Every structure is written in structure tokens, then in C-alpha cells.
Length: 150
Image (cartoon, rainbow, N blue to C red):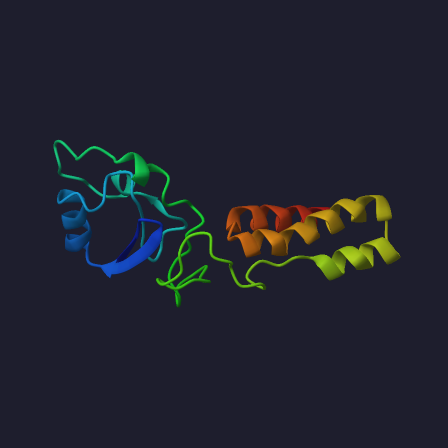
């Protein structure tokens, strides 16, 4: 299978099973570096996914520890897509990748029980700003809240 990895805040890959092991062995990636392949639900640290054979991995540089976050998305053409390898972390995620439930919230305010629709509307209005910040987790959380209140 082909692997993708986060390095210096950028998504890279694809690389083979052998190549991803080699990147860890030569210190290009550390055991805490985030990796992903098709079939995985989210990015995970290499040491939780791979059977690492290094006895003494190189120390994790302080600049690397938080350089890649869970907001990196799988590559274009795969599940939950929305970015390509050229996008850096924090880039805006295209609108429409996460439903806002905005029109449903407005309809609930007009036709239904407005005390429940107000939290739905507030949550719906938080989705697109989160996507513009590149914060997919926050956008999904706001979308889920909007759906719940609708």
C-alpha cells in the first residue's frame, strides 16, 4: 500500500511500505510523525501503525513535535478528500466538504420551535469560518451540533 506522511507542516507521499520504514530508520521521520494510507480513518503516529524495528530512534526535534496536526486530510481522490499534497496545514478547506445545516436552522426558526433552532443557527454559522481556518475537526463538531439541534 502507499503511505502519506506529514513533514515540516506539509503532506508528502505516496511512498511504499519499505520506503516509509526507511524514512523512519534514517531519521527523516520520527516515531511520532503522522502517517496515513487508504483505509485508515485518520492520521496516526508512525509508532502506533508500523512495526518499527529501530532500537534507538533518533530524538524528536522540538520543532517537529507539533508541526503536523490532525487537520491534515487524506490526499485527493481518496476518502474524506479535500486537499492535495501541495497544500500546507492550516490552508482553507473548500466549503461544501462539511454540511452547515444553515438553511435547515433557518427553517426551524421560522416554522418550528425557535428555542431549539437558535443553537442550531449559531452552530451552523461556525462551520464555514472553521473551514476557512483549516480546522476540519472544529467544522465537523459545529456541523454535528447544528444537525443535533435541528
